[in-house]
Image 1: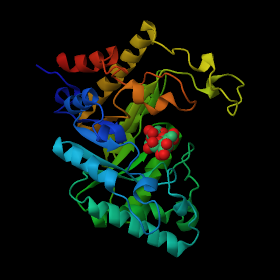
Image 2: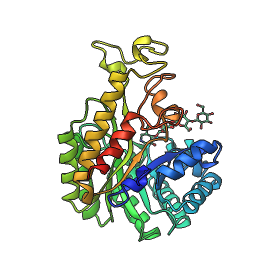
Image 3: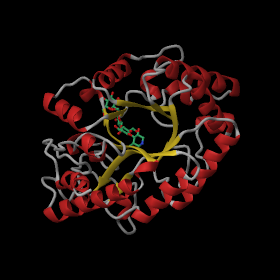
Length: 345
Ligand code: G3I
């Protein structure tokens, strides 16, 4: 009698969720029991990012990340580390590094300190996050600007040296789309040719009702696993709201806050859209099941609709419905659909 996502998919892949401070601190008992019942893998939504764990050059702050690890260990969960090298949510002092030697020293200190501290506790790492532009070229960042593309190889080498057993991932969004995927494949080859150890690729999967297509996702699973890598879906959610750039001729810099057009379902998701979302989740999980041998983990970016980052992005203060549980923690039709796929197997 299967009653949870993690039990239903136990033989196929981990079912994870992102956790932020409130959840790590078990502030809401009902939410806490839902997390423990449904998920067997966790990622820190924010607290392991560099601005939080390494706020100044000579200071690390592991108070929250220690709690996060303890939560995972206590509940026997797979623990994923997010993220070591990312251009965003950097501590201000990191963004100021201009000198090659200083950047090399930073990378060595930062990666070695964090990965060694959690050696044997963190099962896999996003070593580098979002290093690519949409066209597949390398994104300009303080890392690329100082060290050139060698920083990618160095990051993976340093992480492997600090914990040879942890699985090391490159993680990005839209890297299922052909141009970015091609750039991602080249990047993986570069890391390998440079002597770096890379075990997997994370497809974030911040998706929409209409896109990407199932074919595009499938091509990506096949292309990445053909390189000998594990494929993880690391930040899955599906927005049901329009983006400013969907509006023909819209000025994306226009202030859309408070616009009813941008927030069409402030109280309740209409049944018709609820059904579309459920069908979308069903086709995605059907594909995941088809390629279960290539997929290591499927992690949702949040526990329930009420605390999803998508309520605040790209416009603040909207009501979005991207996950399997609603804001009252009730399973949605999408949840039933994802569960049903396993009943019939
Ligand atoms: O830390 C401040 C806090 O001091 C302040 O009181 C509060 C008030 O708004 O803001 C806090 O910062 C917020 C931060 O999360 C930490 O909670 C930022 O405003 C908020 O913008 C930030 O958003 C996070 C975002 O990454 C930042 O880029 C989202 O929660 C998080 O879900 C999102 O996650 C990223 C992944 O790491 C990488 N892939 C994309 C994904 C979605 O953007």
